[in-house]
Image (tube, rainbow over all chains, first blue to last red; front, side):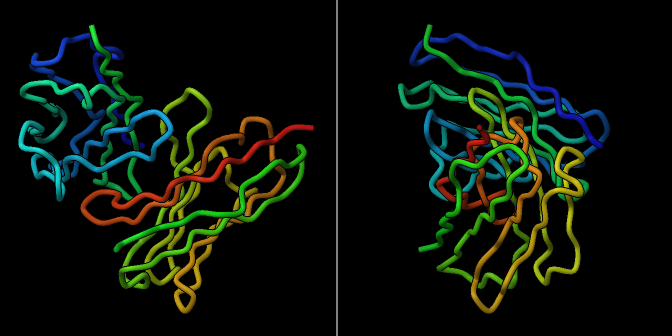
Length: 107
Length: 116
């Protein structure tokens, strides 16, 4: 099983700042990496698929990069609604696995 | 509108059974693999089970293997999760999700509470 490790566990930033979230895979997942945002009481929402493609309706301030084992989700300028938990997910081998999540909190 | 709606959650005693349903609409259900993912209170996302578009392939997390059964009825656009021998650690919100390049959409979730 491919293990995804997200860092940091918690990230404390202020609105307007840049956020950089990391996801590392225990073996190569090529570009089959997705990112999700989850707010309290809500289902996860797909942000990024195949490492760098924004899902429909996702603002341009969200971007993804990486391939192989190291991936990054960047939020260029944090809006108040961006404070949430973020999960990465690989689909290199079916059905895939999730990372443990990064909580992005307001500083 | 592409939509998934779960139902069937509730309170069940340890050792009991429950069947979850996920009704799909707005897309060709039979063309997509489908998944169940759960989230225990205050915890992260955990894979539970998956099924291919025609039902020919299934996957179970080790934690539920032998106790849960995933199935689908493509004529009814519905995904199911039959859960048996339920334990306290199975208590969670259960989400169904459609597999594409990522999981999108997700249902709103249904809460399963295991308690005596």
